[in-house]
Image (cartoon, rainbow, N blue to C red; front, side, top):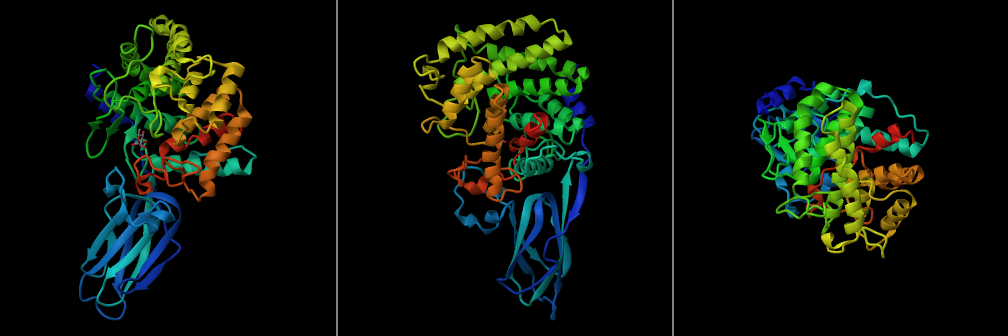
Length: 486
Ligand code: RAM
């Protein structure tokens, strides 16, 4: 019987091995009195555990020493005044500890951090102290020795590929985390893009299987959609959101997995769940085959403020239907016709009800007449329009200052994919260079959760300090560069 316990046991069978590397910083020791501070630079972003030693200098320390230890994914996080934090994600994600050390000792900090820099401030000590033996034990389930360099001849793309694989490596722990600083959770949208990139880089199939099974064990909401995220630690827990686009992208993730492995046993285990995701979506279409608005956090698409999402969501549905039909065909499933016959019907419904002939764009009442890149891209990916008509629309919406624009590398992944689908490889290369290259120009060692070129402080959470600077869904340039031989 394929129940929660079965899926969890399959997830456990595929528990990945973690690889550890010990990193040392640029500074080897530091002598300090109250008020002094030092910044350690480990030379690259890493995820793991920090240890150091404390000793007296001349006189026995006489009283406890109080240290403030700040971990920063970049230098801005080291220098930020976190007392001013106003974000809507918990301030406990900001990585800072106060340690009171009673005696000279070696300290192995128990919590895991994501950082390149560590700032140690000696808040209080009676006599000068010596800090030394700094060490950071980094972990990842990626096997670096399995990573072949990309073939690209382009220097910037090469650099982007390295930063992208570093991003993926640091998000690959005992499952695909969305961000090792925050939320350290398994989300479907992130899983899909991490798995895709992993097929072309570290090729760790166990972790993909594990993540697919972890979702299979989750609790669906009353509409029938899978949880959008799950917790794995300290025990398994199904997440509280059930976003429809993520539920659909779970199905796509299973299709991707089969495409890359031809592993029918996993597909057989997950097929019924995939079908039920599409059936649940079909159940919320209106008589014209267009999705109806539902309560709560129903669609994600992107963190763009004020975004209307239903047209884009409808595109995700088509995209999934197409991929799922291909899978069913490949495995000779009896329900192939049931799903594939919907494709042309839903596509023509979209053209009829969601496309505005006078503006040559998907601007419609469903989304309060909002013009967004998101709607156009997902309608293209859903196959509602194609050829020159689609190319012109894609270029014009990206160029239009009045159109809602993507704010995450997640949505920009799908913009890039749409370009490649339309054969616009040159545009795709330029797009990767501008957007991901833009983060590198600003000093990124790993790619960020959100990036708006004109507004480097942009945060979906109202305070940049809450953003994750090593975010799974931003790792896909390596997928594009390697798959499309850029
Ligand atoms: C945030 C994270 C995660 C994403 C969800 C929708 O909490 O950035 O990566 O998948 O939002």
